[in-house]
Amino acid sequence: MRTYLETTMGAVLLAALVLLQGCVAVAAGGAVAGASAAVDRRTTGTLVEDESIELKAVRAIMADKDLNSQSHLNVTSYNTVVLLTGETPTDELRQRAEQIARGVDKVTTVHNEITVAAPSSMMTRSSDTVITSKVKTKLLADKNIEGVNIKVVTENGVVYLMGLASRAEAERATEVARQTGGVQKVVKVFQYTD
Image (cartoon, rainbow, N blue to C red; front, top):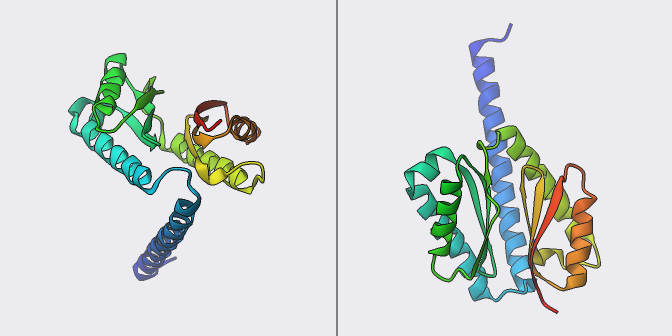
């Protein structure tokens, strides 16, 4: 039988390992972000603007009591084009989220892919994270695609591909995503460079 001290020490050790992994991910993520900025097709100003758009839209959505308490929503901005994904219980709330996103300064287009449904479970969200990682890894490994220029968002097994890409790159990226396990559907939200 384990003692209280052994159980507590085990929990502390596990928590420390998890936190350390998070630090490594943040450090590695920073290095990757710096490297990806060097080859990103967006200007540095647009990269910063996209981050600002996401932050402002999320804050505004969270300030809406009904949206914040009843919905699971994601805001992704790429080249000032906003993609809304997630679930909300009514079409009225779905439209309200879109209006909020459209009201954010510098947003050029909003693609509202929010579904009218109960918020997804943590299990579904975890599965979506795995799918996103698998698709992104395949895109980065494919020599026919500038994977760093393609943003991957997954919601309920539906993969959304955003970015600045040639039509050939977009088609190849779509095919790569379709061939990834767990993907139910692929939605293209590209801005074409040709």
